[in-house]
Length: 172
Image 1: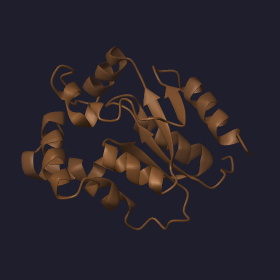
Image 2: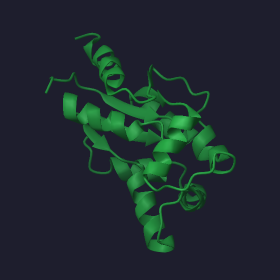
Image 3: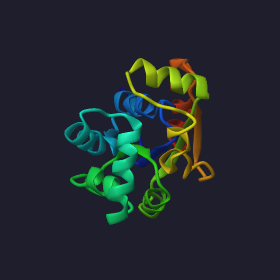
């Protein structure tokens, strides 16, 4: 494991782009703990609907973010001391993005082609319709958000590793 410089990172990108894979590699290779914003929403979806389909998790997002626009991010960060190096595996909304920026997070965008994304989602049994689910605000709200880094992830793990080495070696 390589020693990582202290920092806080948040990943943005569409479903199936590989944010979880990148977050896991950051943890494995740099020792930066992964914080998941989607875990709670998926747990709620399983409890209420018996599945984790995007249509269900998006309805939960819509309902609960009316109470607090950053409800899932706030819940995920509970228990993470401000000085701890962490990687939030997915920001979905502008309110989360602003909160992360205000807290000094560096933003990493993870991209993949629609074909790659839908293939990955299908492989994990997730129902995802690009024409319906792909237009939900959780998929589009951060399309124009400015990221500090971009990782293109259409399948080669060595390309992810090279991109992460570039990110983590700067200023070292």
